[in-house]
Every structure is written in structure tokens, then in C-alpha cells.
Image 1 (spheres, rainbow, N blue to C red):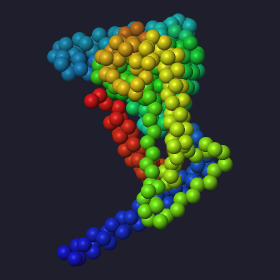
Image 2 (cartoon, helix red, strand yellow):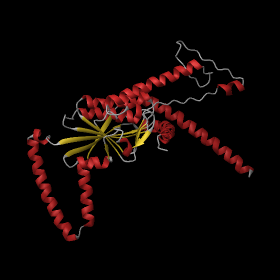
Image 3 (tube, rainbow, N blue to C red):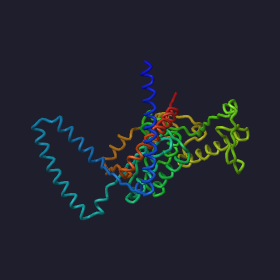
Image 4 (tube, rainbow, N blue to C red):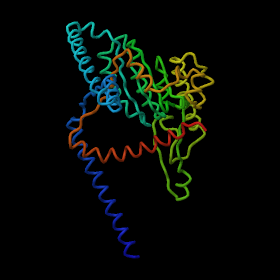
Length: 353
């Protein structure tokens, strides 16, 4: 038994040492790669949803058809493909006619507490705006329980670029758009939410642990030096004063006021005093409060759009060198684990009793 205990202790030490080496090595490799500036480039991925849906339909038809029916259907498809190719050739000679059909550009945003996806979304929006016409539409499938104010403020500003160009913006919410997520969503010309999606949480929250009593108990002094009366208000290790608490609360109220003004600007029909309480509602409740415009899923919305529009899924991916992949893997693993935990805790708070 003593041998097993000693072996377990030794194994833990080895694992700890290996992890530490990997983190340091990964950090050095990633730093060297960043200095060469090789990760700044990326590429767009474009998929046409109309074609994907047609492929799915054909696969299902083939699976349920008899041999005779399948033979007849394949013959008909060849005929249709030939007519389609002829039509495409005709349109190629007249590009203005080829662009007469409305286009719908679809972007996904899956927001963590830091709104990390904003770096990808800004590239996607920039790309779409180089092609989108006034008659087109941008659909953002948004999922977020909110997070840092400045990060979600930037994300909302990216969506405003679409509206500023006079292009219709639709935001679809299948699960949650709360707090910072709703800060983004309220910019939509049209907001669609699933029946039980969580909507709202128009409020501001801040939580700061304080270890001052613990430090005093162990005779540990903590000194903080600042220039400027309010350079630091609430602190984790020092003793917080009533004046510092009042300033901190005042800052929260100011942020809440800006949040409410933002929502009111883009959703003028809402009763801002009734909905800016920090509470959340399901989609079927949110429509009565005018927080959203329509109850439904993004799947139904996009399938319907395929009937009279060309629907393109747009995503941006950063290219990484092998060194970056190896170096960032360790760092990202740790960072993503922490972010996932914080995001999960944040999303857990955005629930209806």
C-alpha cells in the first residue's frame, strides 16, 4: 500500500513537470511564430445552402424509391441538369440578369464570455459587405449568454456596419441571447427566436472576491499605489471603503444606462423600464414584450429563404503554421478550458427559474 502511495505521488510530480514543460515550450513556439507575423492571414469558406438542401432531398428520394422509379427519376434529373447548365450559360452572358435573384448571407456567432468570435465575425462581415447589395439580407445565427461589456460592445458595432450600409439584418436565436448577446441582437431589423430561447438580461453585474480579512489574519500587508483618485476603486486584496463601493456602483449604473439607451434606440417599441431589470424571458414570452419580432427556429427561417433566394453560409478561418498549431495547442487548451467554465457559469445564470 505504501508503494502505491509513493508511486502515485511520483506519477503526479512527473505529470506536473511534463505539463509545465509543454506550457513553457508552447509559449516560446507561439511567441516566435507571432513575431514572424504568420498568423495574420486567413481564408473564407463559402457554402450554398440551396445546393446542400437539394443534395439531401435527392439522397432521401433515392433511398425510398423503387428501382424503376429511381431509373425514371435519374433520367429526369439529367434532363433538368442539362436545362440548368443551359440557363447558367445564358446568364453568364448577361451578368446583370444573373444577379437579379436575392442573396442571403449567413454568419454564425457563438459567443463566450470574451466574445472571442468577434475576430472572425469582423472578417466575415467585411467580406460580405464587398458583395452585398441593398436588396440582399444578412442573417446572423447568434448564441450568447453575454460577457465582457467592451467585447460585446465591439461585436454589436460590427453588426451596426451592416445596418449602416442599408442592408437588412436578421438575427436568429435558437438557444440564448442574453445580456451582451441581446446587446448584439437588438440591432436586427428582424429578430427571430425559438419558442424556448432565453432572451433579455438587460442589466450589468460585477462580482469581486475580497481577501483582505484573510491577509490581516495572517499578518500580511497589502499596499496599492495609484495616481488619480479613481484609478482603482474596488480591490481584491485591500480594504474597500464606502466611497470606493459607491464609485463602483455608480460606474455600473452608468453602464446600465448606456445599455438601456442602446436597446431603446434599436427597439423603440419596447417598454424599457419594464424589460431592463436584468430578468430573462422565453421566446414565446419575449414576443409579447416586443423584445423579438417572430417566434421560430433558424432552420425554418433559412429553409424558407431558399425558396426565393440564393443562401450562402460564410465563415472565416485563420491559417496557422505547424509551429503555431503545436505552440498554441497547449495555451489554447488551458485558455479555452477556463473560458468554457466561465461561459458555462454565466450561461447557467441566464435561466428561467
